[in-house]
Amino acid sequence: MSKKKKSKKKNNAVKTVKKKSKKPMIIALCVVAAAAAAIVAIALLNRPEEPPKFWDRQYSSTSAYDASGDEVELKKIYNNERYPNYQGSMSLKSDGTFSFWMGVGDPSDGTHKGTYTYDRASETVSATFDNGETAEFKVIKDSEGSIDRIEAPYGEYKIWFEDSEKAEQ
View (spheres, rainbow, N blue to C red):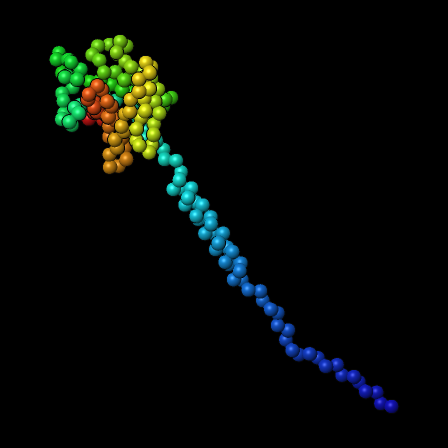
């Protein structure tokens, strides 16, 4: 008897491994990246703008205007003919307090003091004097975003205050 060798057939067919598509992963990464970029953009656009650095500075009155917008000499405002170069002063401190001096003489006898808050949206300083009176001071910026002046009401006039260092230049 003859022995027959059983031949084993080898399967020479190459097994193809089905590769998973990378599209869903790429799409998910793009969505996550877009969401992160949107969050960063929103955070940058909505970050609180730093208020102007007007505090802890001394401001001097530089000019005055009447209700019709005509310039008025400061000596008329202060009722002071003897000191034509007299200037009032204002200071706004970082602790939310202010002083406002418009009278001739010793600052200790004519200085008005109080507290203030700053509204960035309207660029106004809301001042409450120690005697309970209130006033709105308008912050005017130059084209570069720096403070040009602060406009303060004084009776029927509007007084312009500039940084004392800037006014001296």
